[in-house]
Image (tube, rainbow, N blue to C red):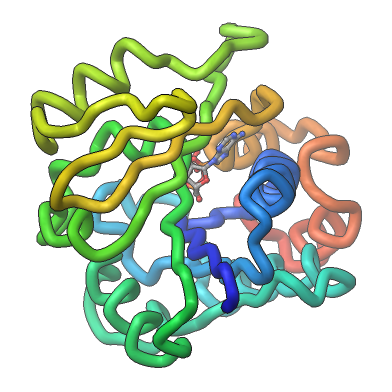
Amino acid sequence: MKRIGLFGGTFNPIHLGHIQVIQEVKKEFGLDKIFIIPSALPPHKEPDGLVDAGDRIEMIRLSFSNHPDFAVSDVELKRSGPSYTIDTVRHFKSILPEDAEIFLIMGLDAFLEIDTWKSYKDLFLLIPFIVMSRSSAGQGATVFGRKPFEDYLKSRISGGYKLSASQSSYVHKIKQPVFVFNVTPIDISSTKIRKLIKNGITIKSLVPEIVEAFIRSKGLYL
Ligand code: ATP
């Protein structure tokens, strides 16, 4: 039986934060494969500064070219209109073997907006979540924000979620479990990278070298 992770985002551009945390999740949860899934039109983000999907997907490919356990999926780019995670999860459930265990991976910042997503209640019936801690600017080393997370989960998703005995997940009688995981705090975001490029500041330590060269050669985000 295979354990598969789905990791979606705008990846505008992909950065070392994404790459580091996703490798930590893979190891911790014993995942065999992770699909990185760039979204077409992000329903929750200003399209401002969003570069061509072909360029975003190419930067992901370059980042994971030596990592056979990570695959880029263009499923959201092939669909017309905005990308909805519910459609993507249904897609993977339909193409992967029935006994595959599939997990939806995201950062805490993304999770805390999930009640604005299309059919989000169905998502909790369909697939277990892995929610990673995310440090924000100036916060330094943060641990997982348990309190805001738990308040949100119980008030917006379902009061039926209870902390498991291992404390590593929240479990529910009907809904899928939500795992929480403290990743190494890395204060990198795509927004920060886009700003640095606009201001003519190097992004060398924030993205893989090959991605930095790609961005420079194509003049992206200027
Ligand atoms: P932006 O700054 O444009 O909002 P972003 O850096 O948050 O972009 P996304 O493509 O939106 O990148 O992120 C995809 C997923 O990766 C989200 O679930 C997000 O929470 C997670 N993520 C991004 N950066 C980090 C990080 N440094 N640590 C942990 N999770 C992260």
